[in-house]
Length: 447
Ligand code: PFF
Image: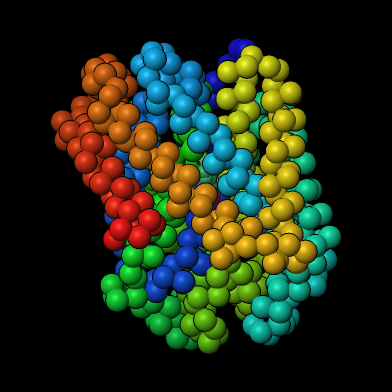
């Protein structure tokens, strides 16, 4: 199969930022921060980005860009006979499960976009917004319908090929989303009692956190940066050979974290100003955002604009998730792109429909005490992504030829990396494996 590359360096980075920035930043980060007490969670999250996220992102880039292949083929080329290649299956499975439940939230975004456009979203009390959300997710037909619509759109874009589809959307959408978030931040900061929200976000109190908070923060860092499911290996396999991997990884991680923090600054001052609870769970932004929009002059227009952009931010993420099994099947089994798309679409649709029904028809089905949606929202980031990250760190830190790492990170010595490279290797060898293994020991009850 012939591979197309991204047209420009900016395009490749924009598409990778498009993968990273999504519902993870704008929906999941605020609700997780809200559930885990705010400041301390955010501090641990940022530490995870810096100490584990950036090095693991660079490792995925090294593997993908040096071979121009997805995970399994890449490992076969870099380390023939190495068993690490089998973790490609973990990535593919993780991507299918994550994209399945994630598409349900994308469906929620379409529902909110639809009710913004039709003018029924705004002019309710905060309590009513909570009820509106609960009634909506409890209506199986509606949830499934929007989820399916989203998946159809997702796979239509994928069918047009990575370059045309992803690059074009990402280039336009990201800067606009950024500006919009800043406008909403300013608005939230002007609300009465907004200080309480900022205090919640930035005052660090470890008593509020606990081990659960640490696990959540680490899973969230991986989720937000799209790590551990071989997504960035797949994407960087399309990078050009002269792209600066170190600089790109740092830029992408910083932009991604900035978007998450901005989302927090939009949400929490409003939560406290309207006297709501920060620990509302997955429905948090869907009850707060309408309350924020209706404060603004021309509220409906802001709502439409925001949900359109959130839709684009989500679809650039699901495209990158879907690309994992698709590229895997094309590279591994040499089947046509359309066949790979159809197989992926069928599998993801099954997971998505089961997740969409978690709040209604299937609400009694529990796994680890959670409904299907919450279960996938837990094991996706906190198990699959962390496991993938652990394997990537160990492989690149301990087993991959150091010359390959050096050549990839510095483009054959063209970029200096006196401090960065030793730091990356140290993190991959020690910090990341120890941190992730501690988390797994916590799961099995040893700590
Ligand atoms: N990083 C995306 C987000 O924050 O919404 C989600 C995601 C995309 C996770 C791609 C994993 C992935 F491979």
